[in-house]
Amino acid sequence: MIVYTGPNGDKRQIEIKFPEGKKRIGVMLSGGADSAILLYLLALERKMAGSHQEIIAFTVARPDGAWNYVEAIVNKINAMLAIDLSAPIQVGDATLHHSEQGRSGELEARSKYKIDHFYYGSQQHPPKELIMLPGEYPNRPDKIELSGTTIPFALVDKRHTLGLYEVFQAWPLIELTHSCTALTSGRCGECYNCKEREWALAALDVIDPGSM
Image 1 (cartoon, one colour):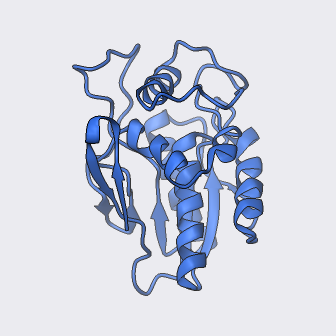
Image 2 (cartoon, one colour):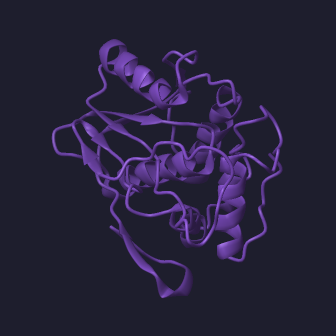
């Protein structure tokens, strides 16, 4: 269990645990900072608890270049925790609308790779009264537990998920992540995800340590 004190003393509870009886755990990586820290925490929890779940990373090769970043993320987690997660697996249909791409990958992973339970790193939008971001707000879940799926960050926003990098001193990992949806490398600085990441790190008084 992680209890995180965010900006202005905002206490939020983030729980990382494995469901009972589930052996093959899938984690959907986007190449971004949220799913990267989620995979790190799940791997850390497994290591500290001495449990035996198999954690398998998946990604959909979306037009934003997600596939270009996930292998480096998995390799970095292996090095940081001295573990041996397998290389990420490409699944799903990247030609679908972005709201359906992850689901298509999950369905393929469940059937082809016999995944018992899935994790996603999605979180809430920033409060609209604090910041107005450009473009359409992407769909975000508002429940932690869905059928066969856990979204541990569903009730917090990006300030809290990125704050976990400080809690666990995992900043070398965020350096490898890519949040921009307009460019396959670098940052446009204008899309929703670029602005959201910029806002969250500014709220934490952190200069973005990544170059992507």
